[in-house]
Figure (cartoon, rainbow, N blue to C red):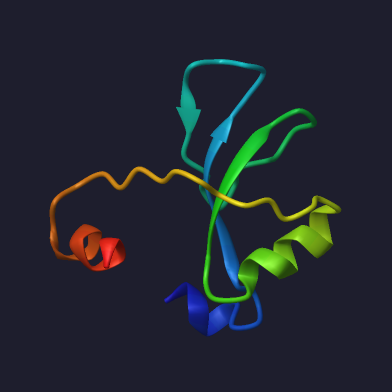
Length: 79
């Protein structure tokens, strides 16, 4: 599993929008990020602060969230 190799990394990129394209790129091991990419990450607890430090971005409050899927994981995240 990935966490066995990267136990000190607490975030993973899960989607890229490139050059305003409506298409979403799902990053793979050989994906190269380009200037201007909008990247979505998933983090574990505290990973958001680590990511902000590395990117130089400020943490902002999230007001609305959409959870897709009605399975056990989606339900658990809603609680």
